[in-house]
Length: 420
Image (tube, rainbow, N blue to C red; front, side, top):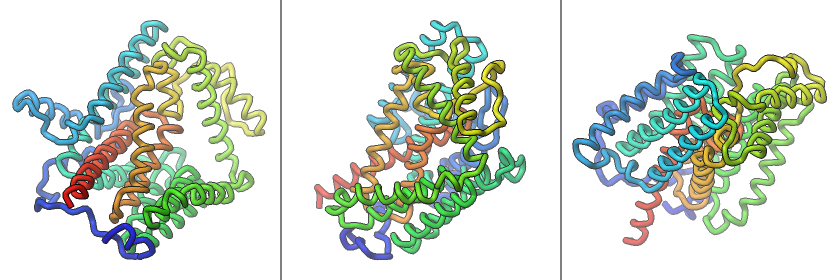
């Protein structure tokens, strides 16, 4: 069924064709490794900082990739041979070298160097492993996502969620994905209504970021339902309407004290990181800002913003230094390693924009289309407003692997169109 036929239908277009008969996932070793990596990621070990247990599985997969390449002199997965894969790895190598220069220049502490360099190394390992697993079988994408969601629920149940918030740090994301998936089984309109419903539910549970992402998903899914020629023309109006909707739902007066404190904390982090990059755009300030004023500047900015917003509960501006993970993947990389330290995340940002554009305006509908869009939207949010330490590294690898899958599917689709 063409995208035009699907324009206002509740019946989804058929899944992307697969010429070859694939064995059941139950008998695929790559699927078991993928699921294990996902479900173990929310559980952590204290190894040079916070290390997700799932990364041990991804490290084992990377070792297997290296063995296969040494024996056969070829990549065991087609996505590893993709030009963008080489681009991501080259960008990460440049970023790692930038961190080395920044740490030597600032004489960063050995502990912070270990955490900073290992964070960059594990990010590359996770990316390579996930690209391999997705290349072995595209069905490993939902397997990894399902594992991550189930791991989040299990971690919240066994260890208790952060701040005692079972929705935001336990079940909320998993239920949102599940609700969108169930809605998409009814077609485009089902996916739109499910996304709106989960967005309102997240706002009601004070999970504003994911609530906004769900409302954005509803807008992008609606655009996918339109004939392709109308999507570009309708996009500005639809996105403007979605923005107004998010602003109305997330009225400041509806936000509680916790939400205001969260806004103050996040704004202070972003401001401090942006000022750090402005002060040293080429060398950066080193891993975790060992010997620079970035952390002290953050405390000062947070104290000022908290006083202006009349919220308390923060440490004084002159408190001793502690650990701080700035909640912006791209800004913390730029602040720590300078413009070259942010190479990977700059490339990731461009790739995410391409993937969203291709998904909305060119990719045929499937039942997993809304789930894919939500993963990409969450990756954009994390790029701007989340750290890249701990479990976030696996989520970055998830988004990168999805982008590679989408590129491969686009190439196949273009070949079929040229041949047809």
